Image 1 (tube, rainbow over the protein chains, first blue to last red):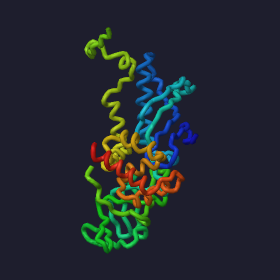
Image 2 (image 1 turned 90 degrees about the vertical axis):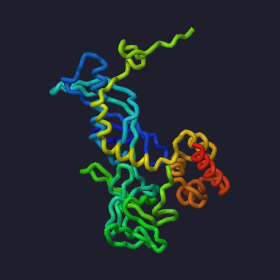
Image 3 (image 1 turned 45 degrees about the vertical axis):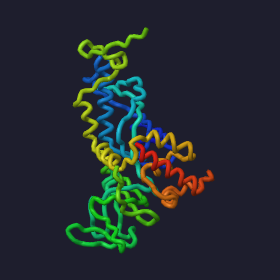
Image 4 (image 1 turned 180 degrees about the horizontal axis):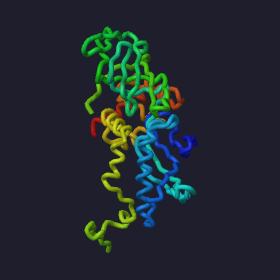
Length: 198
Length: 119
């Protein structure tokens, strides 16, 4: 089991490292006293709405990566009344899909910013995937309005180009609740690719 | 004789399953699309989805070639063309003692391209 702060625990079903994970989470959902209806379905609804809201705000955790979507709600436990406020705390068990980068993983991303010393790519929810010019051997910076990196074979890494890369490191930014990744083209079959017609 | 119950929302004949279900209004469900992380991921997977029928990939490839889930995901995501490329991207398919020789890997890549071709 993996602890997630004070929110609860998560049980990951992944056997091996991969980008999209199916995870079961145990969270506590707090329902304000004014939302407590005697009718069961209304309470159920309030719990689900609050869970989705908390889920969106949470965004990501260091252990599990980015929270993408709730797939199923497995169980709502017995509510516990909080003494001073009258709010009720419900333990819930639900399944989610999360997204996380792993060192050594090979992925594809799309360039969205070209700088003199490297490029930034997007890969899923991660905006800051940085490929340094030091990690793309044989490529040199070509300045201009549509700046790009190019090698002797005229292979080009520029804006909106799809690039296959290897992840060499990730960093969790607690304040922004997001990850940054450092990637490389050092290795066979890495670099810009022509995306097949899908 | 089994007679199928006719559904009629006006009379709240929506089936026992839905009567017990939790209903959400559009404005409540709107909590999900506003969720930026999901939107970005959705755009990404739409752009990089290689197969329209993932079940076919799982059924035909996973057990037949004794792949780990992770290996299947990489092979399914990257659209690899040659044995050398497959081994470079997923070195474990060669080194896990499953006697995955070049011929077997090539056959697996052919199976994957056939699935894609006949979708």
